Length: 227
Image 1 (cartoon, rainbow, N blue to C red):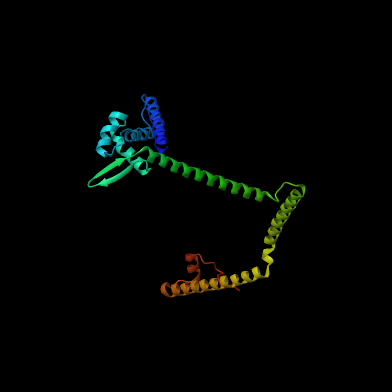
Image 2: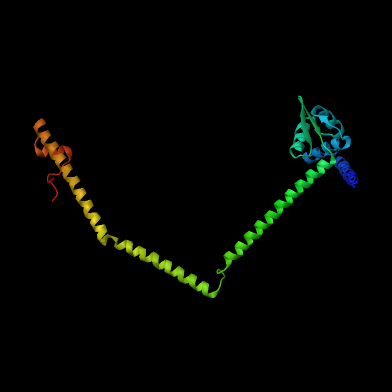
């Protein structure tokens, strides 16, 4: 029974390959078409090949360009469609219909599993979305509460603005302002000391009077310490 099944599978695949060959005569081969034709080499011969053998057969019998042979063959090996074994310094390649059928079934199972998982995730998300909607129906009571909430937020904004206006009367703010004034006054006094020190040095050095020094440096005549 297994041999009959494999034989039927081989016939169907051969028919498909023949159809693909006819359909693609007028255009360049796609990667999948190249892969299919290369598999045909293995299925028809049921033989073991080296890379150099495939590089000779593929262009002549299947129309695969020589430059593409190695990459196409490697892609089939990567997908477990073709077996590869290194013996000595050479690599040997082979593939049988049963191997390809098993690989395709395995790939199909993986895709079906991924599809099932995706459906489960979709169902979970939909349930979560439905759950999130509970209590958010657009009822008359909810609309009224939302309006009230909006009004309260606007009122809070207005009150915050009013508080900011009268912030200057806040005892803590006044305290900070007084501290700042003391610091500023001390700084002014230090600079006043510096100015008088410079004036004194200038008088001694150049024998200038106060009015001449004030005029030269732009110092007001009534310049003095702050009260």
